[in-house]
Length: 260
Image 1: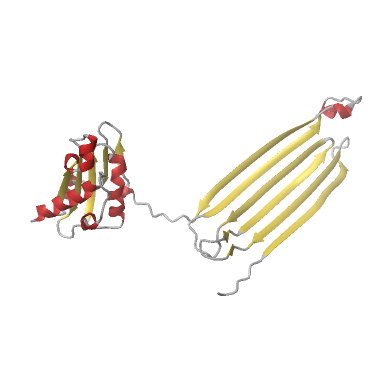
Image 2: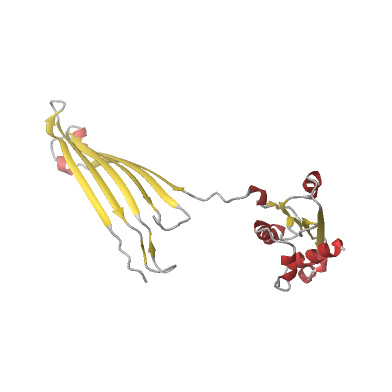
């Protein structure tokens, strides 16, 4: 096991720009500015055991007073990820804060029992947090569609019309819900699952389902489409019994039989 060294640093700078200056002449004015920098290296002990993201932050402060009125402005820019460790998401954050406060006695010119009057304050906080470096691996062509009618309709991948226009040789395999034990238990005799696959490679090209639970059942076909699997996957896979997922196996056998 290699020895790892991790570090951190923190820097803070503050400056007084104005101190009890008479701007305007009636009010004592104070103005302070500050800057903070913080950096923490990532820390990890073992895979999936303990990981602490690194942190990089810059903060800018501007505060002061004009007579009894006090104002504090802060802007922070920061981010965290796993630095040199490959991560899915890098987080960035931008935050701005403004706070103004003043004693109500001074606002209304009250001199007697001024200490009994409350302090009024107004604060504004705006934060924007977002991710960068997110891998764009989504494939709109594999987005599933669901129509929540009775019965449900769901589809993913290409249909027969598209494949015919593109001149792609294809075949289909079908499974009726009534052929499956689960479909008989449910009493659904009209449900249908159809697989469309390449006639030569048997690669799955599309899945179309009509029947109860179609919008849930479609995701099995979506997964196989995503990794470019053939319908042989369904033939060789053991599905829970009795479930509607068995329609995939029945449809795959039907499609292979159609090839002759």
